[in-house]
Image 1: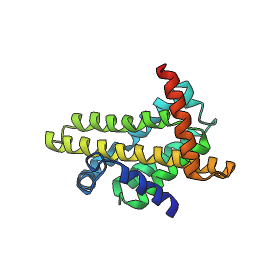
Image 2: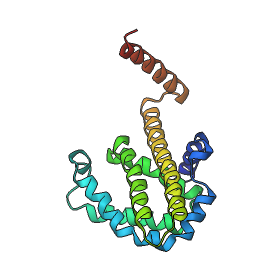
Image 3: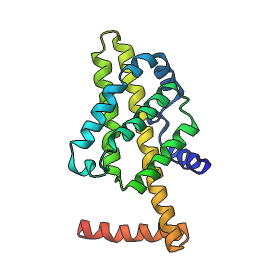
Length: 195
């Protein structure tokens, strides 16, 4: 897990501080923990209804797998609500990137679902009768930064896993692989631009 924590730290370091999850956000989650936990069942159901209603995302799953995947999301939700959201937590998110490589889940599928969770929270918080506007906004903002951070760490973990795997298979120095990738991307960009 230390390797995944290192990957997560690299991702976090690259994010502008204002865009990533912070201690103040953790305090907001802690303050509203019971309310947020009460939204778990609806979040899990809507999340997987969305995935299973779309052919490409539905195809990622095996027959009868939904209950197990729902349990995974429930575990994530509970861990997020109870914390701590620390290096180990984000290392776990980097590992999710690795799992997505193994499961052939492309980044667009994952990147579509992090804002899905943020939008779900926004909808619930703004409709919650017991919340004043300031608390609702604080929850929405905290979740926006959390999902920004989770999405960035998972994506970075995904890219890191693919690069490392390619390096291992080809036996090429990572720096050389990155330079060759850059050069090939430049050639493709030139072709696309027609210059």
